[in-house]
Length: 328
Image (cartoon, rainbow, N blue to C red; front, side, top):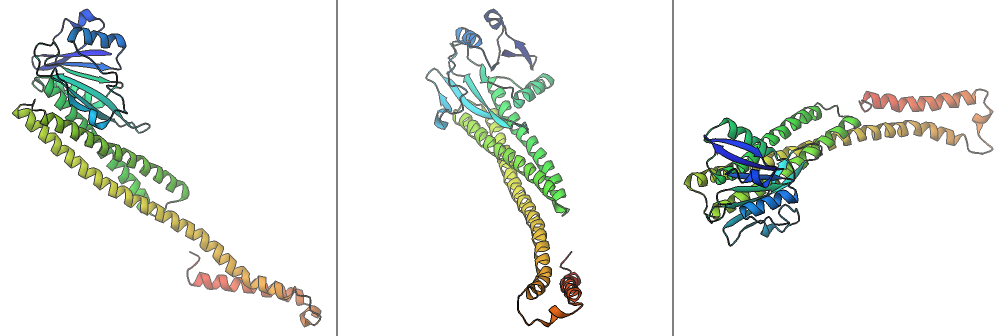
């Protein structure tokens, strides 16, 4: 899908392009290629003179090759954006190309973005730019707003993680954690830990991209200050992810502790049963020996006396354990 975004009266307007002729009718500040076809890439290359690398959104590209500047003035940035789907949370690789130096090219002053999936930060920017006149003035504002939107999306996701952990914490600290409940708690903790780790990786990547923009010296004073504010927001997110990791570790330890307590209760029951049955076993073993001189064997009520003795020897330890509170 090929979309171009133009500014009119300070508002961002979207146009979906279906032919090369339509592309030539607009003067956009942002051209977004979402899962583009080879034909759409050809239109962009033909009209803007822009060469889109074949590995633009490959995940296995070297980290050192994700941020660079071409000889013709094009700035290339490859950054990851979070997609916080609980069923399949992952990062979406987005390639940005912006030319703010070479005015001879039609690509001058236009931000190009290439990605395979819909990115929440992109939707957030489009919604805000339609409702807030004057939010954007050029392609650099769009790029910074996308990074800012990604940081805000990560912050919203962190709040969701915190709420989920609060509910889990309440269930754990109530103390009645059975095997099924413990399994559900551990699954929830594992999901939140994975999401928290993805957010931390994502904000680290965004920090690198914004820092590269600041070093490129293409930002004016106001945009430079906005970039610094984004970095401050990212630092606060980084601190919050560290706090959530500590909370996750605490809940994990508490849940494992309750599981161990439940297992100890089971072991205690078996231990009590073993001790209680030891005296009857000893009595049965004594009277099971084949000695000639055993007076009790000739008693008329010897069998009943032996059974009564075994029952009494089993009940006496049970009474003692119950009195000491070991059977609770």
